[in-house]
Structure formats: C-alpha cells, structure tokens
Image (cartoon, rainbow, N blue to C red; front, top):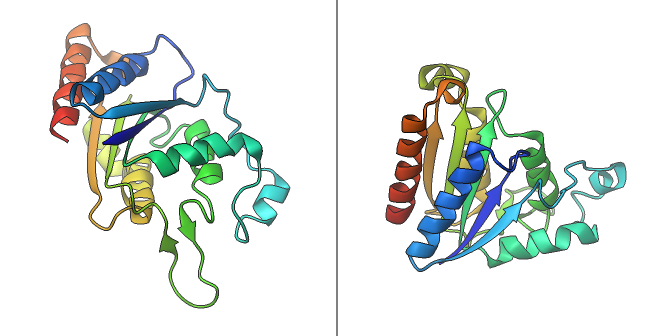
Length: 195
C-alpha cells in the first residue's frame, strides 16, 4: 500500500517529529511504501490568493507549486495526518494545504447544475489522524474535536466509500512525561501496524 504521510509542525525537534518517525517506521515495517510531505520543511504557502479563489469552483489549481502535492494525492492509497492540535483544530499551515490542494478537479468535482459533489479521491481507502493536544480528552470532546471532524468526516467524504479511519491523540501534551510519550509512540506503532 502507498501511504502518504502529511506532517505539519514548525519545530524540527518536537514530539510530533518523533511521532512522524514512529509512523514511518511502522508503515515501512508492514512492507508499505511511505512518502512524506513535511509542510514546514517545504515552506508550503498556505495562503489562497484572490485569483486562486475566484477560479476555485471552475478549474483545477494552476499554481505550479501545488503540482507535486496534487501528484502525491493521486499516488496515495492511504493518508496519515500528523500534527499538533492548536485551538482545538488544525494548524493554519495544514488547513491552508487542504484549502489549496484538495481542490476542484483534484479531490472533487462540482456538479454542473443540481446535484452532489462527486468525490475524486476514491483510490484512498484509509485515513489516519495522529495528533498531540494540550487539553484533556474530556474537554476535547466537549469542544467537539473540530480538527478530527474536518479530516475524518469532511476529507473522508471525498475518499473511497468504505474508507477506514483511525484517530490517535496524546492528550495533556503540555504536562506529558517521558513515560507517557514513550507509551504513545508504542501505541502509534501498534495501531498503524494493525491499521
């Protein structure tokens, strides 16, 4: 299976980087092919400009900087998103990547008249989210897990009809311990191996 790992964290030595490495290790150990998109390392521009928005509903993006990202999406059979949860949702960089890359004629097709959006990512049969979160689990549930819903409901709707999903979060990250972080990395390896 071809697995696209979409990683979003600005600090190279962050715990999210350790999560990324554990995930790629688990993917490779299963005999799958992993491809990494590191949004901060690539200095991805998440800002949608005026002309891009004006023509968003009419055509595929024309910015040459997006072509490699679009090709990664076409290549993928599974996608693993790794990011920190900030303000209960996705980092702006990752949200901008979704806005700009998961676009018309790439991830979906808009109806010409009445009708529903037609998904174009039906070759993706698995989506996983692995995140860190400063809040406790209970409070994240009260707030509604907006980031989780964006990916595992909204993005999933553009994928294969029976697309499987997985969600892992290290809650209380701000007060985590070496023991809790090691346990979470072990969980990442085990869950991805089974997924």
